[in-house]
Each structure stands twice: as structure tokens, then as C-alpha cells.
Length: 285
Image (cartoon, rainbow, N blue to C red):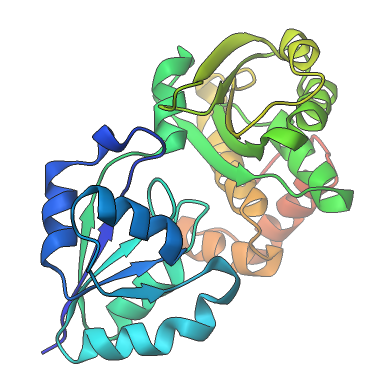
């Protein structure tokens, strides 16, 4: 009988944020699957679990190293997946392993805990009833420009990750694309030098014109919401925006959205093309 894969969220800074349940799981599983075994070894040592067996699953070779992990799950072992910090699979390795675990018939158990995106969002004071997590924007070129153009049309709060050394350029690009929306820069969350700053994008771009140290989470106010008469149209547009910014292929999006919403695939594809080109044409209802 296949075993169990526990998806364990670990601290993003303050080690006291590790839940009691997460500690118990890490102590009881047969092995811990780690993004970086050196980082996870330090956490285990802090918990008095330095002798826990470790399996490596780095971001650059997640697919290539799935075989051993899935084989052990198939043999009935209980494994815990940890990334360097925060919740696995959220802009971190893990999604491919979780999918493979399901396919192998293993039991998948989430052990929730710290997540930089939600930590920054709950401290932002911006609308949280609907939000879109975008992870890291493409670094440059056409894909970055398209992502920013799509973000400008989004009617919900957006959460992004960024490295401190690229913060200044990203804030400048956001000002150009979105105007002076309210936003929050959350840096080094839960760590000794935690900094959370809220203000217009222009002011934040000035404040962080030299960049910043550490990992950064950005929370950006959404644009104007659709009116009641436009709600259905806006809901569809947001789905298309989400899928495009997530890197899905337009042909795949058109096929799935058309099937789920009872629309013509050709109409959805044309709407996608308009969004990618920054057009303001309406979407099919």
C-alpha cells in the first residue's frame, strides 16, 4: 500500500513560527525531502532531529529526482516535503512531487504554516476578499511587458515576490504600468530586520531606489472593480489574466476555459489575443 507525503510549511524567518504539528511530523516520518538539505538540516538540528534521513529535491532538478522519492512512497514510506522557507510549491519546488504522489496513489497531507504571500497580505490593509498571487514577474523582455500590462487591467489585489536587488527596477516598472496605486513592500518578514512599508507606488519607488536587502513580498492594490452589469465579463477576464500571467499557453487556456464556461474556443482565443496586446475589446459572455 502506498505511503504518505506530508507537505510541511516551515518558518520564513522566525523559527518559533514552526507549528507543533509540523515538528511532530518531521520527527515521525521515515525521511525528509528537502529543497536544500543544508538549510533543512539546520532546522532539524534546532528541533533536536539532526539524525533525520534527508532526500534532496532542488528546484533546478525536481523532475529528475522524483524517481527515488516516488519509489519510496510507493513502497509505503511516510515522507515530509520541506522547502528552504515557507510553504512548498508556492514559488518553490514541490508541485511536481505532489502531482507524482497523487498519481502513485500516495496519501497527500498538507501541514499548513508560514507563507510570505499571506503574511504580507494580511498586514497590507489592502482588499483581501479576492487576490491574485503572481510569484516572480518575468525578469525582462516581452513576457515582462505583457505581465505588467495584464496586471494593469486586474481588478483585484496582487501579491508578488521579488529579490531585494531587483526591487528598485520592479517598483519603477509598476509605477509606469499601474500609476500611483497603493502598495506594500514587506521585507525580511518575521526576521530581526523585518520592514513593512505602505504607500503609493511612486513613494515606494523613491524610498527603495537603491534596492533592499533580503527577500521581498509586494502587495499591490487592484484597479477599479467592474460594475454589477460587467461582473460576469470581469470574472472571465480575471481568469484569463490569471492563467496568462501564470505562464499557461493561450491554446491550452482557450480550450479549458471554453469547455468549462460553455463558450466557443475561437471567441476565448480572440479575447486572449486582445488581452496579450493590451487591447480594450470586450470578452465573450
